[in-house]
Length: 170
Image (tube, rainbow, N blue to C red; front, side, top):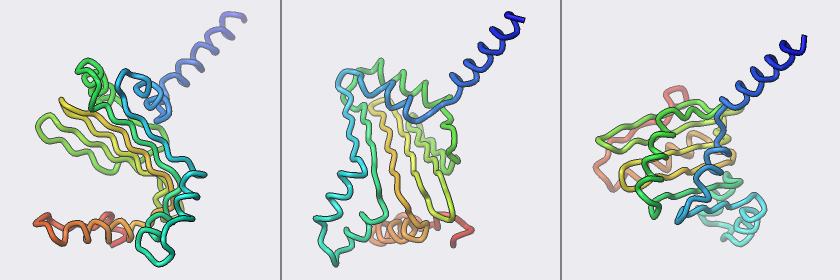
């Protein structure tokens, strides 16, 4: 009987350890030498929102954001960057839906979403190449139409191809 209990405990711990969370990824690389980490909390965002001009576009954009975290490995050693690249090859964050996986030469970008009630609640961007690696996590209540408008505004002056974020929202 003891064997079954021990075996069951080992199975539960193995399943728990295999679950991949974004918090674990941040903790794994945040403390590397020369890693740049920034976390703007909900409280800090509320202060920024209070000081934003009331009739500006920035106020509207900030209203949808609640917090964000950024980790840049640009100044880290090549060993850390290669380790990050290998980690991202197998990293599949739990609770997120893969949205875009873009690969070009040695550059790779992964974009994951958490959606609830027609809003994007979290946007997770993971990028890596031979010279850099970064994680960006944005939390808030973003409407897909607002993101489409931002993309359109950003591509208006460029010769980039316009596209809708989601077909179901287009």
